[in-house]
Length: 84
Image (cartoon, rainbow, N blue to C red):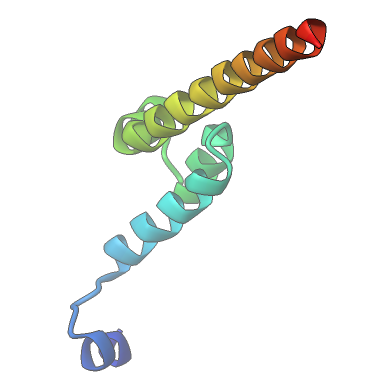
């Protein structure tokens, strides 16, 4: 942890390091709350969800936007094809 403080000027404790690891994991796998609950040794998934809910919310909106955009593009390309 001293190396990090000297290199980038931030004091990082074990709890912060653990939280960053959880965020990185859940950014890549937002549906894997149960896995992260076990890794963090939380007794309840509610604790994990409460701590990392903003990450899941961000991914939920991103996924929603992606689905709507794909449907919109598909509908638009179908309309264009029928006009030709």
